[in-house]
Image (cartoon, rainbow, N blue to C red; front, side, top):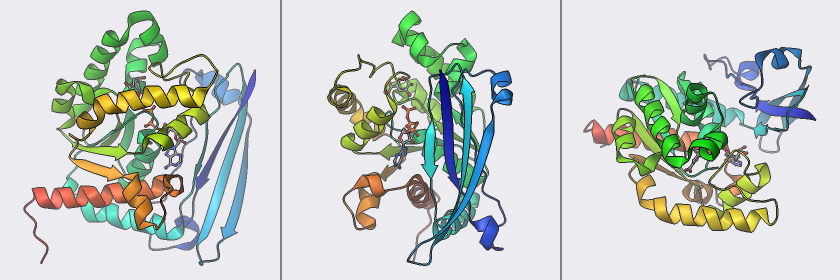
Length: 298
Ligand SMILES: Nc1ncnc2c1ncn2[C@@H]1O[C@H](COP(=O)(O)OP(=O)(O)OP(=O)(O)O)[C@@H](O)[C@H]1O
Ligand SMILES: O=C(O)C1=C[C@@H](O)[C@@H](O)[C@H](O)C1
């Protein structure tokens, strides 16, 4: 089967603003087990498009497309940021740099809460490396998370996940997307507390919509036969969320998509972009760090 990978990245400050020193970077993501040779043989195409918006915002989208054979995975993304947002995240990153002092950020949250998507925005802004504990487990074992669950069971996966977090806890200057269930083991918190833990709190309905859109093949705890994907995902996710709600709330910082939506004057969290979530995450991290530092605003 031939599959197309499309990733749309929004670049703007490096075209219009001299005040931004770090150039935004983007990356194109491939299915986890695609061989390097296959990637090299894949034809790419690029499309750069400038858009002007009614409120004087300018955005420049770089769309990268690529086709390759023997894969059934489709990944696509549309990561848009206005000039204002790009400047805001750069400014906020610089502001918290000295408080952060190289500590890593651990993103926790349900499957589909955006840990990977928002994590990459954050790591770019902070000049940190990005890592994903699920990918680390896959690299260590040589098989996918779905296969680990199928062949060895969940307990084996949880052991490997803890080992991945232990290794990550030895690193600095990382943004880490943790597995959705990492919060359920207390030993994992011991490792995550080496850095700052941030819960991406996304309402259940939004999670279900996102996951139903991309499918459950890579998410063994949600996987089901193909019929009625929305309601099956809803039931399973709501059970997990009920079981884990308190565990997520252990995070030092909470980023609520509903609160961001409310600030934007909407109730619809689907209007809240990964960039807006990343900016709110940095603001909440700043509040936490200043409180920890005994800082008192006058
Ligand atoms: N703010 C957002 N608005 C709309 N869609 C989003 C947003 N953030 C992420 N998504 C989409 O939701 C899906 C899940 O996002 P992502 O993979 O980042 O979540 P995750 O928390 O890492 O999931 P998992 O733990 O299951 O790997 C992706 O298709 C992504 O493009
Ligand atoms: O929520 C969970 O328990 C999981 C989430 C994924 O990130 C993987 O870690 C795995 O599929 C289990």
